[in-house]
Image: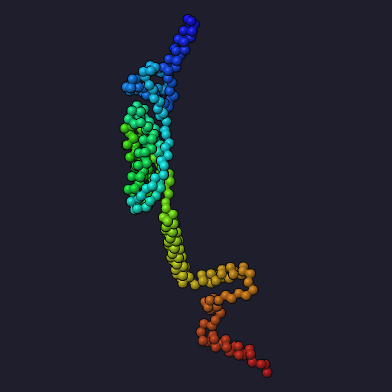
Amino acid sequence: MAPIIAVLIVIFVIAILSMSIKVVNEYERGVIFRLGRLMGAKGPGFFMIIPFIDRMVKIDLRVVTLDVPSQDVITRDNVTVRVSAVVYFRVINPEASVVKVINHIQATSQISQTTLRNVLGQHELDELLSQREKLNQNLQTIIDEQTDPWGVKVSIVEIKDVELPEGMRRSMAAQAEAERVRRAKIIHAEGEMQASAKLLEAGKIIAQEPVTLQLRYLQTLTEIATEKTNTLIFPVPIDLISMFLPKNKTEACKTEEVAEVKTKPAK
């Protein structure tokens, strides 16, 4: 009988010790309640509690990545979009995260969804697409203020995706195409203006030095000569052959007399 009692006592002591000894990791804290009263947070490492009197709740202090489901948002310019986001937060006060709220992860998720709809509904669609960094900062500040009493610190809020209606996407694509066409026309016009200015400068130089026109003519002949064509018609500037023409009427008459003499038959 005595050995059985001893075995039972040993088993009871082992059970009590297993219930008393607690070990929490570096990234965890154990919130202790004694007969329902908050005693504080312990850890990390090894510690003991009083069985049947103390109760421990483990709280993870690591950063939690929370996906906010897509929310239907009506912007200030009456455009309905679906917006999804991601929230990064962690517990900085384990005691408050247990005492002040039932489930701090679910509560943070709900407050993130409502804040996302409220904040983005105060902005126009163009701001939602172009000022995302500013909106992320605004969302982070508002959500962090609301979760601070729960001992939760929201560090980052990022808008992941903005889904536009099909008609709005077609309109934006047409607008972007029109903008690209406008820029192309402006660039083309600027190029024509610069080319005209350069041609004007070249004309002034040629007017001051006529020999440059002859050099340009010879250069053009060289370029055309490389073409594999059978018949080539190229206009000759009158300035280029002016040196071969008579300069006055006397020279012209002499030229005609010489021609007549050469054409008369010999007697």
